[in-house]
Each structure stands twice: as C-alpha cells, then as structure tokens.
Image (tube, rainbow, N blue to C red; front, side):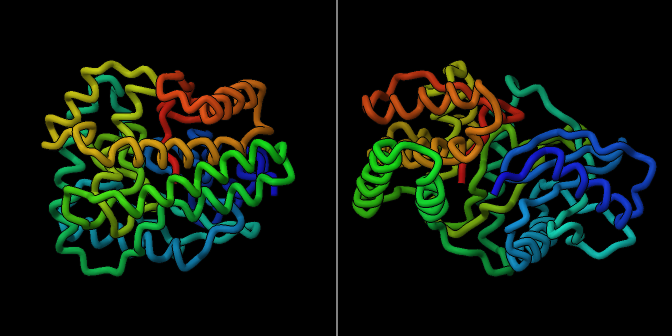
Length: 305
C-alpha cells in the first residue's frame, strides 16, 4: 500500500493529542520505513507504517530499557501520560527524548567507538533478541514489487539474491557472533550533552558482528565518502572489515537490501526513479565502482534492512 507523508502527519497530530503534546506542529524529520516528527524542543515522535507488528514494537521498548540498564549510550523513550506504544488511525507510534544533530563528517570515529561499546556490553543482554535473517525483508520486497517493475528487473535481482544466499552459507565470520545493531551508520547517531548515542533499534538481532561494519565501508565505495571517514571508523572500532574475505559477499548483501528498499519508494520523486535506474544498471553490469546517491535519507546514507 502507498503510505504518504500526509497520511503520517494526520496520524502524528492524533498521537500528539494522546501523548499530551498539544500546541506543537509536527515537524517532519525523516520519511522512510517510518515517519519521524520533531515535536517542539523536547520530543520526537516516530510513526510506524500501518502494517508494523505490535509485538515487535513492544520488544523494541523492552530492549531500550535493557540497553539503558547496561549503560549503553542510546536514545531514551520520553515520559508521557499515555502508555507506549501509542495507537491511532491503525498505526503505532513511540515518543522519544529529542537529541542534538551532530556534524556527520566528524562522526565516524565516534560511531566506531559507540559500536565497540554496543557490541561489548550487549553480551550481558537479558531480553530475547531475534536471529539475524539477512535476506527475508529484501526477498519479501521483491515479491511485492513484482507488479510495479518489469519482470526482467525483478528476475535479475531475485537471481542475485539467490547467489548471495549461497555465498552467505560459505562465509566464515572472524568476529564472534553477538548482538548487532543492524543499522549502525552515522544517520543513526545523535548527541546527548555532547556525547554520541545510538537511535533506531528495529533491526537489533543476534548475528555476525561484521554486518554492523559493512555500511561505513560501502559509504566510501558507493557513496563517495572520504576514505579518512572509514579509517577513523575502523581504527576506533578496532577491525578493518575490508581485509576480511567475506567482505565482498556482505557488501553485495547490503547493496541488495538498499536497492529493494529504495524500489519501494519509486513513486516518491523523479530523483528516486533515476537513482533506482542507476542501481539496477549496477546489478546488470556487476560493477563495484558505480557511484550511488542517497536520496530520501536524512544522512544521505540510510542503512537497509
């Protein structure tokens, strides 16, 4: 189904009433898998897609409380008079404390340090976490996209997905399995009192920690970020994923997820349509050097799921 910014805004207004946050016009900050609105100076409201599973949202809320217990720097849910998640117009929503936006170009070392802390301290996690299922969401999107794109395009991506699945079975991670953030990138780092914290925990899972390191490497090769950004990140984390023989497979996995994610939004604008064409041609050519553009994303580099 098509879910528009206008739909999300109507839901946000209703949820502000439920949360006791009247008197503020919702300010759209991000619109992708969810719609994120700034509500005044102190709060952020995340409105979720209408088909979001309520049990998943409750798990995320429990996880956020557990991360706070482990002293992992993360965003925190706001204290409001209503119980979370909020429910309005067939959607779920959560209200968070509003944090400060950082300077993205200077953030990569902080991201590496933050991810290292996250991986270390989540070893003591006491709440259940789902297993990493790398291609489930992407394959589901390919099925849904069948009526919106040429058969040749969907078939090509489906064959690539099958190839990636075979390669994943052969890859041997070198880092120990554990809790992965799932969307560890600079767009999901904000600041509280001058210190970086993670946001967005929908993709937290148990899996190979290499997955959390792929995005920043791809940001250099596909999106043209400076090499020094990656060096700052890898040095701070303590591991260079590009030296690992499974990197090419994980990179392709990331790029498959990113391609199918964007294809869902092909109706949004001409820029999105043009970028989808670039990505599809990249897969046809199997070209590792083609530059991509991060349309729709707050940081211009949103991670997929």
